[in-house]
Length: 601
Image 1 (spheres, rainbow, N blue to C red):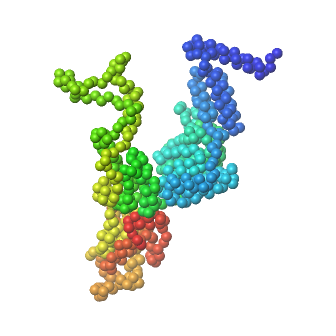
Image 2 (cartoon, rainbow, N blue to C red):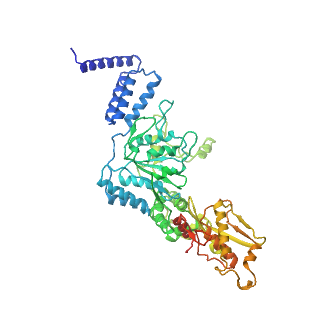
Image 3 (tube, one colour):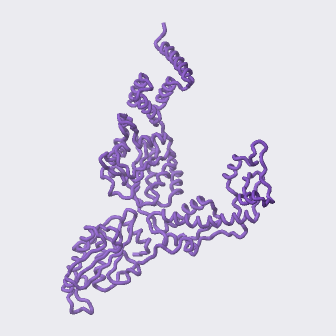
C-alpha cells in the first residue's frame, strides 16, 4: 500500500503527463504547462522568505489558485498577487558599507559644503556599525531649488552601498498612490512604496521622496496622511499596503524627503521627519562648485577636453555675479553649458578643416560608407559623362562592398578628434564670456536706487531662497493719509503703520522734531498735513510678512530727514510700537541674498 506522499507524487506525475499530452495536441508543446508554472510559483514563494503572516496568506491564495480554471476571471488576479509576493524582497538586504572614511570621501567628492547632511549621515553610519538593528532615520532636506537635495540622496546611497530609488510625490493627489488599491477593484495595483521596493530588489534601499511639500489632496483622499504610517519609525515596521493586505517591514529603509518650503507640509507629517535646512551657496562656494564639479561635467558632456577649453577664475566669477542670481547652481550650470557649446562648435569646425586639408589619415581597418553624389549621377544620366567610377558592386547581391552592418558600425565610431594647426586652446576670459552670453543680466543697482532720500534696502525670504527689495517712502502735501502700493499683504501693511506710529511718537528722541532749516516748523503738525506714500517696487509680485518693519522705518526716517540710507546696508526685522526689533526667520537665506547683491552690512 502506497504512502500518502508517494501517492501524491504518483498522481502529480500522471497529471503532468496528461498536461503534456494536451499541450502537444493543442500545438503548444509540453513545456510551460500550467502545472509546471504552478510548481515554479510555489518554489518562488518558498525562496522569498515570507514572514509567517504573509506566508499564511500566500498559501491560502495558492490553494485557491489550484482549484480554479485558468479561464476564470479571478485566476489572473490571484496569480498576479502571488507573483508580486514572490518578487518582493522580504528577506533580501544589501550589506552596508560602514567605512566612515570611505563615506566621508564619497560625500565630499560629490558635493561641496552641505556639512549638516554629511555629518548626519556619518553619525548614522557610526551608530549602525555599533548597533546592527538600528532603524533607518527619516530625513527631510529643505531648501531652494538647485542646491543639490536630489543628487545628495544618490550620493548617500553610494556612500552606504545601498540601492537607490526616487519616488516623485509632486502633484500626487490619490491616497491609493501611497497605500495601493484593494484587490476588489478592476486593475488594482500596489502603492508606489511597495512598487519601489520591488524595483530596488532589497528591503533596505535609500528611497528619495522628492517634492514632499507639493502633495495634493482632494475627494480621493489625502496622500500626506497616508505617508504618516510610512514615515513613522514606530509604525512602519508593519506597513500594510491595501493591495498586499499583509504587513511589510519598512524600518530598514532610509527615507530622504526633499522640500522647497516647510509651511505647506502638514504638521503631523513634518513632526515625523528630521529637518535639515540647506539655505544656499555663497559666491565663493559657487565658484568652488563650478571649478570642481560643473565645469568638468559640462566639458565631458560636450565631447571636448581640457586641451580645448580653460576657464579663468575671473570668468567664472563674472558668470556667477552678472548672469545668475539664485540660491542654487542650476542657472550657473546652464550658462557654463552655453560656453562649452560655443567652444564645441569651434572644435568641430577645426576638425572638419583638418579632414578637408588631408591632415588626418584614416585607420586601415576603418570602414567607410560609399558617398553617392546625386548631382553627379544626374549629370551622368543626361549624357555628360563622369570621371568618377561608380562604387564596386558585390557579385552576389549587387550591393556596395561595404555591407549595411559595416556601414552602421562605422557610423557608430566617432571620428578621430584631430584639429588643424591653426586651432588653439580657448581660454574663457571675462571678455569671451560677454561675447558668448551677451550683456550682463544682473547689475548692482543698490548705489543708484539708494542715492536719494527715502529709499532703504530690505531683505525677504522666498521659497527659492532670499531676495533683497527696495522700500521707497515719499512725503507730499495732503491731509495725513498713508498710501501703500506694491501688492502688500495685510501683515506688511500693519508693519508700515506700526513703523509710522513709532516715528510719530518718538520724533524728539529721534531728533526730528525741529530740523535745521525748518526750525520754526513743528513736524508733528507738518505730518498731519502731509500724505505718506510707501511703495514696494515690482508690484506684480505679492509681498507679505513682518520682517520689513525695520527697513520701512529707515525709509520713512530718510524721507523725513532728507538724509540717504547707506547703500551698503540692508535691514530685516519686525519693529514694535516701543521700538523693539523682534527676531525673524530665514536669516541665512536673507544674508546670502544680500551677499550676492554686493551688500556689506
